[in-house]
Structures are given as structure tokens and as C-alpha cells.
Image (cartoon, rainbow, N blue to C red; front, side, top):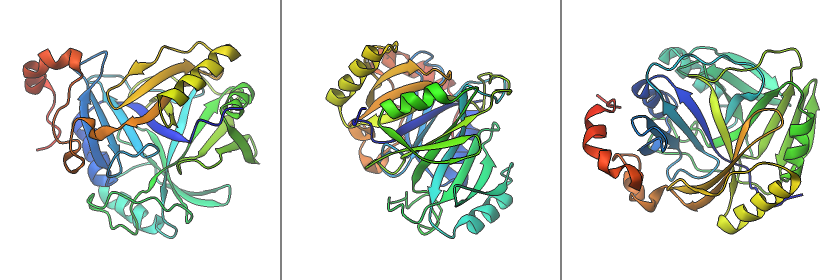
Length: 310
């Protein structure tokens, strides 16, 4: 069993409109936009990152907003719900805020003894807030949400799968342990993690497969401290039979990718170098940052990319 993985690093999804996406996360959820860059493979499409003050691993939601993309179809073989942690006793605040802001899909529920509020993102993305009194992570203090109510970071993600058995075994190999179960859902967690420690696996054998589009999670990333630990994880996964990509430089972290037995794309990302490698922490997410290979496109991109504010 591996011990290098310390919880979630980020979750990356698809969106249909960059301005709408930016407004939802920065204003309605009070998250900080920590990076405004572009898709490495499609530089005419933004890659937007939202999180806490520094974009700490375990807090970062990222999006590819493809104009004119079709709506995703939810099903199995995907991340079903991305869950944020909020302080105990704050769901009432958030429910009222969401009603006032026109956020849809609101549902109060209780899972594994935790009170939570489900809600939908701007493209029907599956989200929830869960009250976690043990979460001591600091929130982004300048997002328009009182610090006593603000989001702390990720709590968990849920995986919807035809058969969760093989993916559960993979996660256990990656250092997760089963800590609870409820019906068809198995809850796993990594010890001594970064706060974003939990993965729920829901087995839905008769459900249709998901279809990627706006509102779909593209991949979920797990955090390791540095490149040396990432290489250890890569070798262990390859030795176990997984087809893992070479290490890819994503400017703000190094990444490896592999497809899980249940169909979900996993990434293992380093905590280094971080989002302040090309911007001062006080000004994260303000300027358009481009990968080196796309710098020559700056005049075109600055003219044609959708304005996020105004």
C-alpha cells in the first residue's frame, strides 16, 4: 500500500460559459480565482482555477469552459458529486444565500451522520456543502463570505460506478482505507491527509454510462508532496499493471494520468511549485498567464478570449 498520497489535489470539470463560471465560483461561492490561463491542448479555451488564498492542494476547482459545448449526461463512470467543507451550523446561511442567488438543485440531506446541502453548478454540476467541525483550514477571507461561514476546501468526491469493487481496491492500494458504508456506498479515507481526505464509491449496476460535456468532471487529481514521491507512485502503478502517462509539466504542478477500472480519469499531481511561481500571492488570478509554448498567441488570445468581468 502506498503512503505518498495526501488526499485530493484538484478537480477539473467542463463548462459552457467562462464568465458565468467565473461569477459562480468567485461571487456565489466566494472562492478566489487563483489562476487565469489556457488549456494546454486548446489554447483558445480558458483553464480557470478557483480555491483558497494560495490555491492550496485540496481546495482547487478548475474548469475548461468550451464555448458551444453540449451538456453532459450524468451516469456511471464519472465523479458524481464534489463536496466542499464548511463550518458546523452554517448550512442555513448557505441555503438562504443560494436561494437569493438563484442557485438550483438545493436539497438538505444527511450522509454518514453529516449534515449537508446539495446544489447544482451553472451547468448542472453536482456539488454539496458538508458541515465539518473538525476542519481547521483557513478560508479565503476576501470573497464576500463571512469567515465563520466560508468554504474551507474540499471534503470529498463521490465516484458513480457500475461496479465499485476494482476501483475500491485501487484506492486501497493508493493508501485509502474503508471507514464506513451505507447501502451501496463505501466511504474511504486517507490518514494524515490534507483535509480533502474522503472518497465515496457508489455502485449503480443498472445506471447508464455518463457522457462527457458541460457540467461533467473531466478528472480528479490526488496530491503528493513532490516529484520524487510522484515517481514512486508512478512506478508502483505501472508495476501493478496500470497504463500511466509520463510526467507532464502543468506549470503549477507536475502531473501523471491513468484511467481507473470504473472509467474515471485519475491524476496524481505534485504540491510543487504552486500557483505563485509566476504571480505574487497578492495578485493571483488577475493576469492572463500562458504556457511557454503559447506565448506567441497572446495578442490573439487577449482579443478573442471572453472577458470574465464587466
